[in-house]
Amino acid sequence: MLFGPPGAGKGTQAIYISSRTGKPQVSTGDMLRAAVASGSELGAEAKGYMEAGLLVPDEVIIGLISERLQEPDAVSGLLLDGYPRTIAQAEALAEVEKVSAVISIEVPDEAIVERIVGRRMDPETGGIYHIKFNPPPAELSERVVQRKDDNEDTVRNRLSAYHEQTAPLADWYEQRGVLVRIDGNRPIEEVGSAIWAALANHRWNQDD
Ligand code: AMP
Image (cartoon, rainbow, N blue to C red; front, side):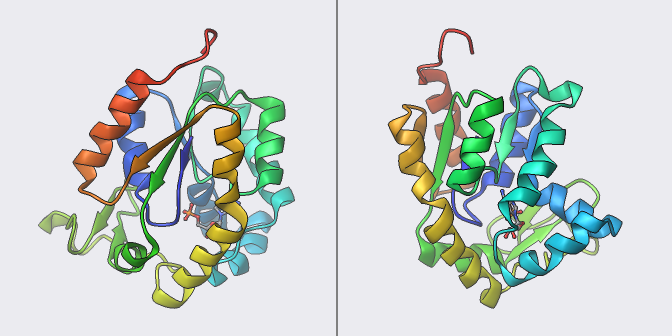
């Protein structure tokens, strides 16, 4: 599982880990954005929370993810990105999956706003860029978009939601012996190498 504040680099690192391990990346944020775009009932329910920078209610998320976890590609391990975000979600997950490693990507609040406001996404591939730190190639410059919730006002709410509702999960997982802390306040490649090294040294359970 990848854990950390909005803009920590979870999505960017998830793409990299997923391509190296072959485990599917499961992002509740991506699933919710797809639901909003499809105009489904669930999407309509989630949209207001997302645009305000608030967490979508637990029962909506737990229902959404439980279906995804039963799909064939998820049965032999997966990489969670942005889920769980509350203790209630972590408890629901513990009932159906064994969490073997939680990578906490740590980035101070001051760095988050600049990262999020400059972030751009490629809607076709899900690729993530930053206008200053990781600019999209010239041929994609017309195609990349800014997420609706990647603005300065919303990011402050997202950070508050993170500190109040999500950050306590780090202790929760630390007590269960699976938390690995990674300094995320450095170049993308260095964070990726640190995660890879930490996973290689991680004390995996025998049946992982
Ligand atoms: P993300 O792409 O992970 O930054 O998620 C974007 C938005 O989707 C968040 O700000 C929340 O509104 C919502 N969201 C994504 N995952 C969750 C979750 N596990 N629990 C509650 N809300 C979520």
